Amino acid sequence: MARRVDKHLQQHLWYLVSVILVFVPIMLSQTGCAQRENTIKIGGVGPLTGGAATYGASTRNACQMAIEEINQQGGLDVSGKKYKLELIFEDDEGRPESAANAYRKLIDQDRVCAIIGTVMSKCSLAGAPIAQEAHVPMISNASTNPQVTLIGDYIFRACFIDPFQGRIMANFAFSSLEKRKAAVLFDNGNDYNKGLAEFFKARFEELGGQIVAYEAFTDEDKTQDFSAQLTKIKAAGPDILFLPNYYSSVAMIAKQARAMGLDIPLIGGDGWDSPDLVTLGKEAVEGCFFSTHFSKDDPSPRVQKFVSAYTEKYKQPPDALAALAYDACLILFQGLRTAKSLKGEDLRDALKNIRDLEAVSGQITFDDQRNPVKGAVIVKIENGRQVFYQRINP
Image (cartoon, rainbow, N blue to C red; front, top):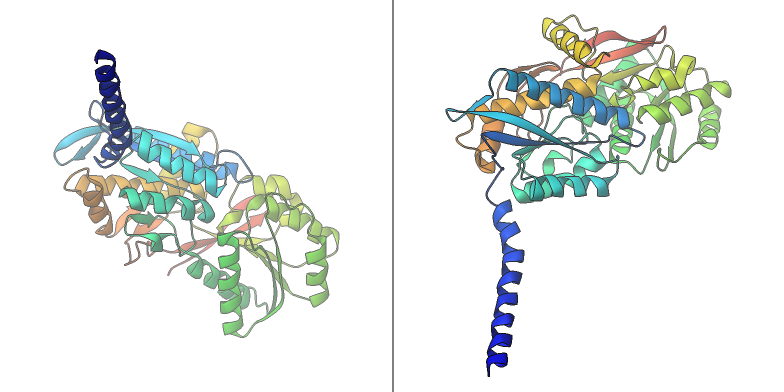
């Protein structure tokens, strides 16, 4: 009889343990962000390894700098109480599956209050549904694909979106450079590249230009040889080539294009914006143009203050990814200051109501889809340097 009771009790104990193991993580994930010794945890996600690693490094550096500035001031005032901030940054490797895992860790284990990131649109599209379901606000610093914020009302961004970027580069090619026959070469396996190519094509044709070649490849992290596509492009006789890709593949394409005598202007989007572009591409990218969110040579006092602080701290000037990550932090800090509480829904509502926030990359007001209404800059590669060319307002 005693053995039978012991066995019965043991079964009940195992049942209780299983219930605890199932429901405690769920309860914890629903209690909002973790607070330890008056500290708010902030998540960060970006590619610290892989073909876009400089983007992740810039994102992490700028987030850390912004948070340190707040902590040096004694913390952030939220609902009348001061909090220190702590950054927990995860590497998404530039891969959607890694991004999803990073978001789950930050939300389920670290219980962050919000997430800054991630950079690449394909990775944000993997992480955003996780943040949305958990009611954890997310501010992508650099994902320009319009689908990102459409995932839900907890998803924000600090950058302009591809329809705007594609249009301004088509306008620039047609009106400023006076080109009439354009070619496009893009990675059709990446949401960012594909979307930007489509928006450029639509606007260039709308202006009266002709797209004489529209060539694609798959996976710029692995593709090394672009000769087949470039041969078709050269035969079509374009007077400009639009490359809506990331800097490492742009450098390879530029070198191969020049080697086969395709000596026409190359233009692109913010995926070009890395100090490694000139290092890798050398003279092949000389005289080329790209759109981006920020230029360290912009004479704006706010820009120059940020450039000075970042350069002093990290011994190199910031790129656009750093500026956007810093701006994403400014957005989050403003949301926290004005939120009724640290609950996800209260922070979301505060972020939605941000108006005319003075940030490094411009004044920020969110539209109905939580995209900032802001301008862009055109940068030219000149004498091996990225040089501010002009600012374009929305």
